[in-house]
Length: 341
Ligand SMILES: [Zn+2]
Figure 1 (cartoon, rainbow, N blue to C red):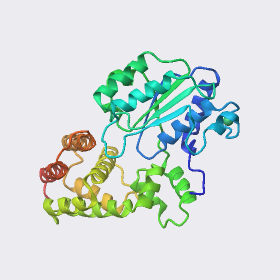
Figure 2: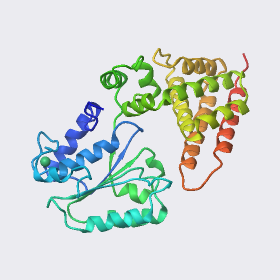
Figure 3: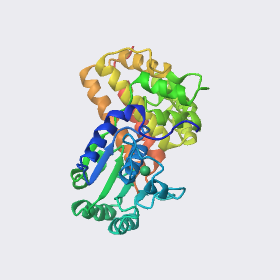
C-alpha cells in the first residue's frame, strides 16, 4: 500500500483528539479496553497511540517519527512497545506470553519515557493468563500503558473489563467508508457494494477485496438465500460452507442476520443492501417474521450465531460442521414457522 495505512483514520479523529488531550494533561489511564467491530483499525489506533506516548517531541498530537525515541522503533519495532497476539497454531493467548509481558513492564524503559503494550483479541485469553494479567491491572507499574483490544468484549472476564477504561471505536458512516475505499482501492468497481458487504468497516472491506472474500461472501449469500426459499437443501449449503470455511461463514452469517434484524426492527427498505440481502428481507417480511414475536426468535438466532462464533474461536476443538449444520437447521425452522405464502 502506498497510501497512509495507519491510524488515526478519518473516523477516529475525535476519539484520537480526546485521548491526546488526556495524554497532554497527564490523565491517561493505566489500561484501556478498545472495543468495536472488526476491521475499523482498533489495533492500528492502539499502536500509533503508543508511539505518540513514547515520542519525545510529538508533532500535532502524533509521533514525530524523527526524535531519538521514535528512531528506536525501526524494523524490529520500538523496544518500549510490545505487541501481543495469538501465536500461529494457537487459539488462545498463553500464560507465557502474559508472563513475558509482566517481565517487560517491570524493566526500565529504553527511551526513558514509558512502556506500552497492545494486546490483540484480549477476549481469547487462557484463564490462567487472564489471572496473571489481572494482577498487572490491579497493581500497575508507573508509566506503563496497556491497550487491550477486542471485538467480543462481552466474553472477557468482568474483573478484567472493570479495570480498564473503555473506548468504543466508531464505525464510519456509509459515505465516509465509501470515500475512504475509493481513495485506497481506485480500481474497485463497486465500492458501495464492498462497503456494504463489510458493514462500513473499511479495513475489513479492504481485506475482503484483497483476499477474494467478497466473492466467497456472495457465494454464501446466494446459497443461503436459496436455502431460505426452499431451493437448496441444508446438506448442499453445508457442502458449500465446507469449501468456504466454517469460521468466515459464521462471520457472514452474523453479518447478514444482524443486517436483517436491524432493517426489520426499523422497518426500513434500503437501496444500500446487496440484492441477496434485499431478497432475504422481502422473504422474511412475506413470512411475517417482522412481527414482534418472530423478531424475538430472530434475535435469539443471532445470539446462537454469536455463540457459535465464540465456540469456533475458543481453545476447545468443536465440530465446526455440526455447529454450522445446527444453525442452518434452526434457521429453516424459523422460516417454516412463519406463515406460508
Ligand atoms: Zn518522536
